[in-house]
Picture 1 (cartoon, rainbow, N blue to C red):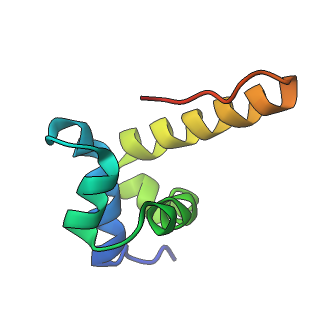
Picture 2 (picture 1 turned 90 degrees about the vertical axis):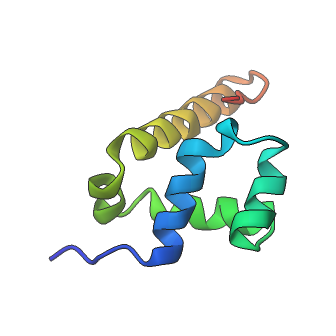
Length: 86
């Protein structure tokens, strides 16, 4: 049985989906809305996108983040500069 996403996990996915609509940098939005560092945000995001309940909650965002991660890994493997999805 799938677990239910915690409010913090939903907030992380919500921010990942909409951060670009806000003024300022993504890191500033992370700090202001979630009260955590960018490093911690990305650690948690990497864990969250692997969960089936995250895919159920926000499939478009989860798939987009997974695709970007795969593209970065592929670029590193092929010896290309890291791909950034911004």
